[in-house]
Length: 64
Image (tube, rainbow, N blue to C red; front, side, top):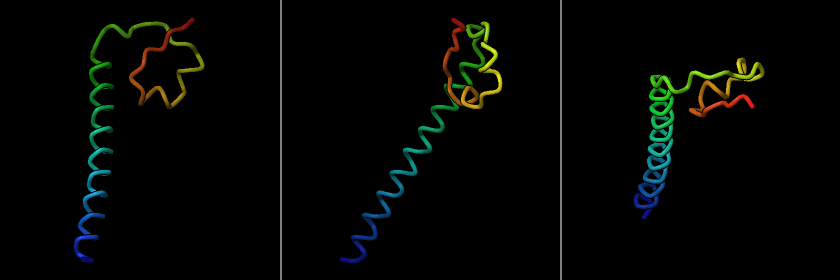
């Protein structure tokens, strides 16, 4: 019985690790595709230039 419980725990841990890696890979892919497209040439507000969150989020920064 103890082996079954350990296998169940191991399966859950591997599932979580897999989800994390897939999420990170998706963010990197989106960011790479976004960086390759010429559609994001726009004016960036000054406060956003040094903010590290914009390095990871593939979002469009509209200066309004």
